[in-house]
Amino acid sequence: MVEKLELAEPHLAGWLSSLGLGVEYIRSQGNTLFYRDDQGAEIPVLDLVGGYGSAILGHNNPEIVAYAKSLLDQGTPIHAQFSRHPYANDLAWKINRILQREFGTDEHYSAVFANSGAEAVEVAVKHAELDRVMRLAELAEDIETHLDRAHAAVRSGAHVAGDGVVELLGPEAESADAGDIARLTDAIRIVNRERMAARPVFLAPEGSFHGKLVGSVQLTHNVGYRAPFTALAARCRFVPLDRPDVLEKIVAEERRTLLDLIVEDDVVRLIERELPVICAFILEPIQGEAGIRVLDQDAVRRVQEVCATIDCPIIVDEVQSGMGRSGAFFAGSHLGLQGDYITLAKSLGGGIAKAGLTLIRGSRYRTDFELVHSSTFAKDSFSTLIAGRTVDLLERDNGRAYRLAAERGDRLLAMLGRLEEEFGDVVKDVRGKGLMIGLEFHDQSGSTSGIIREQAQAGLLGYLFAGYLLRAHAIRIFPTASATNTLRLEPSVYLTDDEITRADKGLRGLIAVLRRQDGETLLHA
Image (cartoon, rainbow, N blue to C red; front, side, top):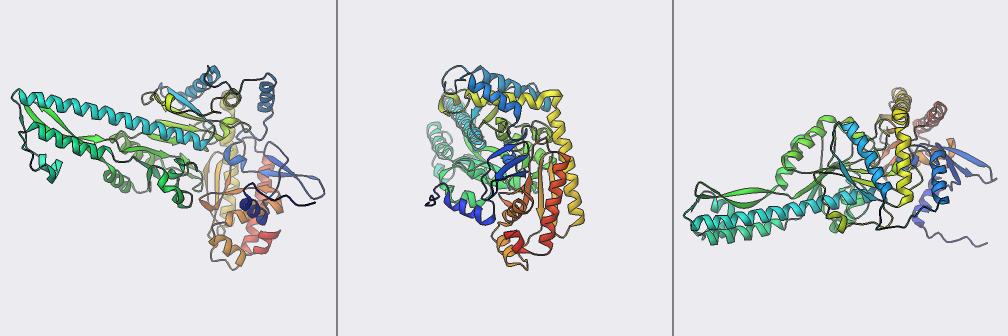
């Protein structure tokens, strides 16, 4: 029999096979994936990847599966676009009530639906830019009204104050007589038109990851993902949050103004108005792909303060950290980080549906957005109803799932903390919150093992570890995308003590092999 040529991402398939990760899983349940060995026996694998955070209630949660079957049996109208979707409104209200409870607010957020986390981020980005463009148009109209008013005031006897005219308008306006209101307003219009053409800029912390679509990838700090597509989307400046002076410096560098005229006591004066050029600041309460890093509360407060001074909206990306994984529905609630935009996805689909959602603060919401953005599968009955049931299960028993996430996370962190204490020469750090945890290993680029050294220098060490853990211990753990020395652990809230013990045993095995610098065992065990 001729082997079928691999056409589905063939390079990736070959790479996975070379590390022992090219396994076909045949079913899943709870925190377990199953594959068949060469003899056809079913092999259970402890899955601590959890769909990169998509399975907060476990693989194929029986209640969600039963509900999904009932929806399909009833013939739920998945493709009924451009009609009423009351279940979408119900979901929006459920999440609004949680948001109001966790942040202590009575504000409402409008909801725009999506299919994935990256798309939810794109929705936030597009809406923020639409809002910026509309604010800019309103500002331009306001200024035009003021220029006309200045004309009328001068005709009625007001005079133009000369202070700052040349300095603000530049050398091209030197010939403009301060008393010549027509020439002055024409010069203001020329300057403003040029300044209004400035392209928007986004701000994000260093280490950010927000997806790999055309827009979202430019908000992702990893230059390897971003650089090939830089010309396709808006510019983003990345901020080291541990250096508040840098944030203020970047904002000062990017700020722009428009010129305006005001009339006070028969005097026409030239002033500057803030030009909305910084479109939004986007951040994750717990950075996922940067190595599972919980944001510092003081840094978050500085971001909020700086953004408030320039009316810059904040996008809070809860795609990976949200849906209860941190011990609360919104990880931002631990930090007092209530965004103008909040994105949700991953576990929103209950582990079986593809669902995303962007919440937009009511005071910023632009109804025009509904006419310029749409998505074929977003807000369909199946995924939206599944999302609603998922939220119900998280909220059940007064939020028992959140308490489980916190308690199970603490137990897992304690186990990993003991590894760090015992093997500090190998384990560099353990960090995280709830069931979003990172285990960081020391750099091995100087290893005495050629295999370990080569993989470390290529930035692939975590995948080498993942292959060993799967083959030798039937444990599935992957590194974070931009910090591959850090293994991520994002199991469901139903993680058992036995599963934690099993993870402990497997990781101890990995550490023992690494201490021996036994690259052959890591690659081939």
